[in-house]
Length: 178
Image 1 (spheres, one colour):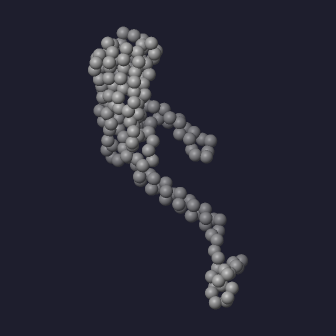
Image 2: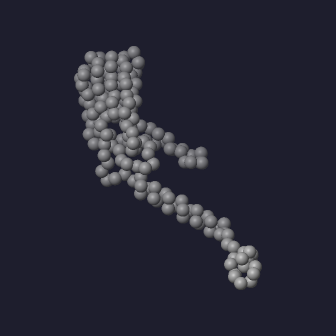
Image 3: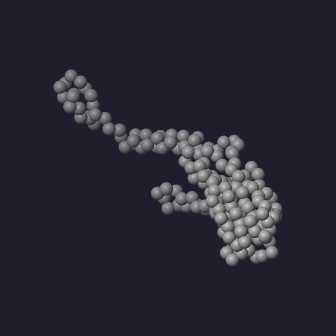
């Protein structure tokens, strides 16, 4: 099939043709572009061999002793864009230093958790952990959630049941009170 000549070629002196890439060629170019973007994103977001850490401090401003019962991964759901497919997963949970399970925080004492992070241009939560403390002498618990992103440190807390005390969290500081 002969392609039409451009207006400049109607004078008979030039033989330029207009060119529209075929559908298959456009698809190949699109796939190549997407692949290049994915590869470069992977190189930019890959964690370094040794990540840095940020220190979260849990402080006990009560008359009760807190005992660290457990450290658990934080669950998340990952969904593919524009596709109704999702998968259950967890965030990475790695520390460069932390107390051991069953370690205690005496009244007016504190514990420090060095949760890892790395620099990533895309942001988002990288490492996260759920800390569970038993409030000794009661049936109550202190639940603490900590996570890191390239630019923020996040924490939340909850006392269960609420009548056993209160807590505040934000950034690197978590405080329990009775």
